Length: 77
Image (cartoon, rainbow, N blue to C red):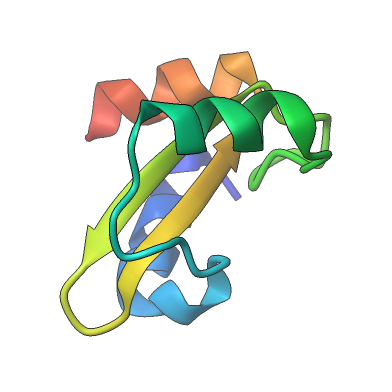
């Protein structure tokens, strides 16, 4: 699946993403990025970035990505 297809899937099924706190600040993102081991949502490699997606029907959700897929998501977002 390419990045655009994965984004479409997540839009249709946001519950596939791990829940994030209701209020997230930069420290929360840094802690998740540096202190916790997560894999990239797309390729399974170690995640080096963490984003929060605010999804109305599902609340905040984490997007853990490697650098390459973070850059691709930014193109489509």
